[in-house]
Image 1: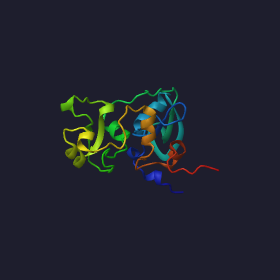
Image 2: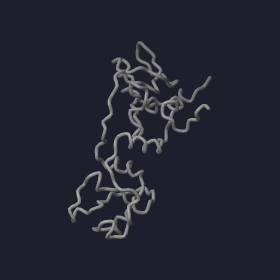
Image 3: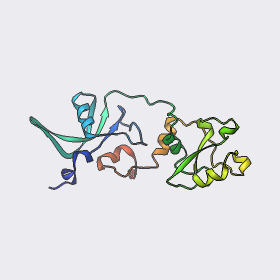
Image 4: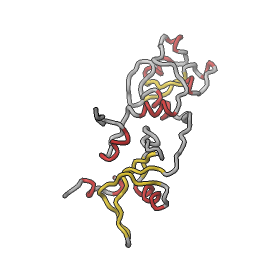
Length: 189
C-alpha cells in the first residue's frame, strides 16, 4: 500500500520532541528537530521513539524508519521566565498592535514611556505596535497621545507564552503529532 511518507525527502520529516513527561518542550516555536538530530539522539539512547514516519533511511548495514515523535529520557525543567526577545514580545502580545488591535505582518515595538522620557527597554515598558500607530504615538506616552493600550505590558511566564503559542499552530503538523499537541483534535466525550 502506498503511503505519502514514502516519497518524502528525509529533510521533510521533522521530529516532534516531547519532554520526559510526554508534553511538548515548546509550542511556539514548536519543539522539533531535524531527522539527523533525532536519529543521533536515538543511537545515544537519550530519547525514546513514540511514533515513526513510513519513510526509511539506510546505512550500509541497517535500515531505520524515521522517528516522527520522540520523548526525552530525562526531564528538562523549563525556565520560569522567557528571555526578553523581539519574537517573545510579539508572542506575548499575540502578534497584534496593542493600540489599534490590528494583526499586521510588519509589527514594530514601542516603548510605552519613551526612552527620551526615561523609559527602559523591559517587558513592562515595551509593546507591539503597527507602524502607523507607532508613528502617531511618536515620543509621547499613551496618555499624552490619547492612545490607550489594549492590555498593560507585563513580564510573562514561560507558561503564558506557551498558552499564547498554542493559538498559532504551524503550517505543518504530521498526523502522528496530533495526540501530543491538542491542535484541532476532537476529544472523546
